[in-house]
Amino acid sequence: MDFYLTALLQGLCFSGIALGIYISMKIFNIPDITTDGSYTLGGVVSAILLTRHIPGYLILPAVLFAGGLAGAITGLIHTKLKINPLLAGILVMTALYSVNLTLMGRSNLPLIGTSSIFTLIQIATNINQNTFWILLLFVGAITLLIGYLLKTDFGIAMRATGNSESMIRALGVNTDRMKIIGLALANALTAVSGYLITQFQGFADISMGIGIVIVGLGSVIIAETLIGWLHITSVWMILLLVLAGAIIFQLVLALTLYIGVDANLLKLVTAVFVLLIVSLPRLNHIKD
Image (cartoon, rainbow, N blue to C red):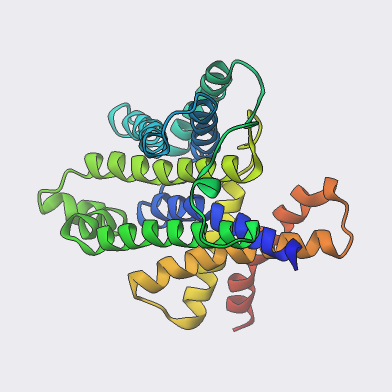
């Protein structure tokens, strides 16, 4: 049971990545690879500030700012220099590797003897249950904020930018600014996942973000499949399904390890699982 509870907790930690990928890829139609770097950046900033015993209420804003800045730089490169968004994300991600390594000063930074968000708040006596409730409240608060934002006039303009850029530009909306803000928001959410997972696992590592975009992408694709099957149109339900996608993704990986698949093959299993999810709607379409 603890095995699956750990997978559930990891799924909640990765909810920020799922929401970030949803914003960049599904709202703005931008394949943003900055995710790999901004996720690690969030973990690195968290670890550095925690080891220096900076108050917790200052760490989260710093993580949000760092991730948002990374996303904004990608947005600026794409919109102002007219560079393909995929290439812009790769350039920023590559640069962030050196930035993260320079900030840490080494490849791995353990959080020995430091407090965390999971130890500062005591909701339940069991450690895993306490972590679960803290993550649930934390992720719930973020989801409510994102849901509220997407329902405002500004959020509707963001969604319209991805759906019909020429139309919303004709209405006087600065689409370049919308893209920059959207990518900044997406990467700020991704950095929050780095913030959570670093405290959850007790260390930050320079390689923790390698291939992490597939986790967010897989979560969003699971959500998209469920949305299509259930014909969901509500923003709130879509966000909840994105969170569910992140949890389902981790539970599938946990089940894979539980049945005895070699841990060295986990990345391969992840890639195949995402491929199956992507292919399923298309296979149904061909059958019809």
